[in-house]
Length: 320
Image (cartoon, rainbow, N blue to C red; front, top):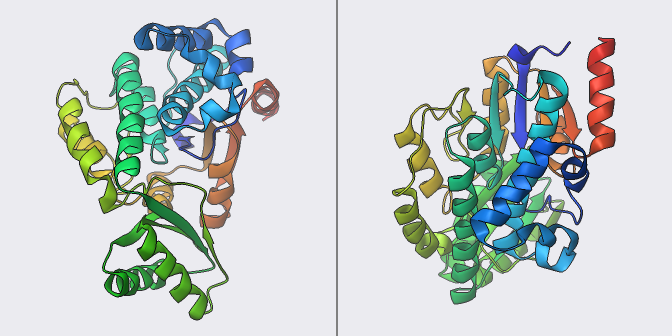
């Protein structure tokens, strides 16, 4: 049997999308299919068709709601299999960037319908901000977080434009974001300092940087129209790496998150400090499970992305 008092849920963000994700859950579990159906109703169109179109799925305004739906569909499949469809009570949860919305809905702090509206608007606003002020992102591999912060400060001063740490994903993997000229200056500085790899990412939206300020301001207005509740179990916030315990804290986090960093290394460490030993990654791919291995080798990561991985996990729980 799984020990839920030592199990945390993880929900991935942009970059984990894949054509066909979660569709096996939709076909096999009525409660998972309901997530897709409600999304179609809320959006007033057959949004679920996006899941079979790789090009459409990679558009930011589609990627974010699709990942949100996929994560919740995986959760509903898990609940149906393990708990007769009733909500699970894990120790805690966290979501990487967009995944934070999925985690909050899993914890019943945010309704499904409000979550669907917010994640689509978030994607649209980020796409608009990116079109108005083109930015860039890059991954610096083999660098420590303090060194990357120093590089960003130097590159910002040199280029006269902002570049900041966007994602502290795990030791040795830090993503930077900002104006294109500043990101290129940071890449040059990183290479000059002997950093293992500095790779520009194939994006035009400078997520988690000052270039998202216009999106953050518009998104704040949307957040004010939503009713949040205290989460049923702790959800670790991206920008604070601490539990979000009140509606006010949740609203502040979701607003700050667009321009603030994803402190993922510290978020996993916070979950470990709470007592988490097993981490179930729900949604698509196994990106977060891979990061987990780099953060804490003693933690156990289990990606649940389709019927095969779900069945394997169920069999393992029966055998234990």
